[in-house]
Length: 92
Image 1: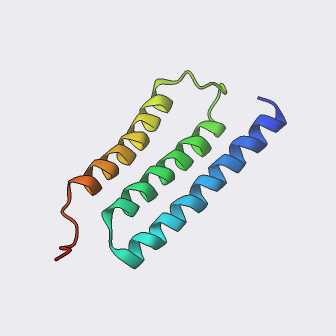
Image 2: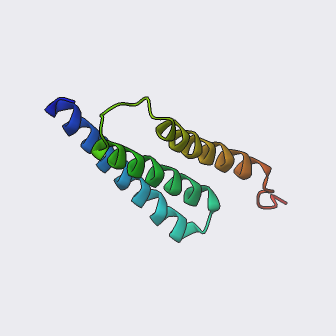
């Protein structure tokens, strides 16, 4: 892995943490589970990126890497489905 790859991987990991913190703040403000699911998803993606950056050999062909991504993206899908299934406020 080149220095540029390591730099970009770290930047993406840091950006994922920042996005997770924004979603966590929105969750605390609104109490909506939608934001909590997104915050957990981005934290999982950041943790996976930072963990696998330290792993040797540097490769994306590790099955656990794909499992973490699958779980993170599944959390996003669950959040969307959950948000659309819940009844909204009464507009009477």
